[in-house]
Amino acid sequence: MDAEVPHPYSITVEPLKKLEGHSGWALRRNGTLIERSDRGLTTEDKACENATKAIEIDMKPKAGFR
Image (cartoon, rainbow, N blue to C red):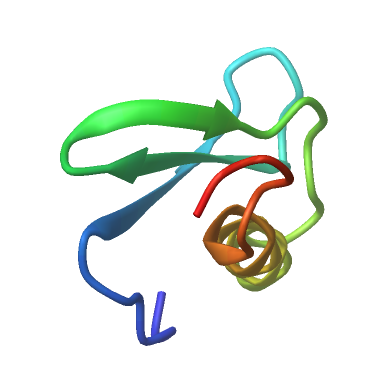
């Protein structure tokens, strides 16, 4: 995984045990799990790309919060 991940996030990409040949990801903020892939992705690169998009969504300001 070569993506630059902004602090305080971290991405873990691992092969799935139940779906051979596919990878899943876990996204953590300050070490706490905040999101996980709900489906297998065909390559580690695609899994990393998908996790990076999840970071971008999580970084956006939430409605009602400042």
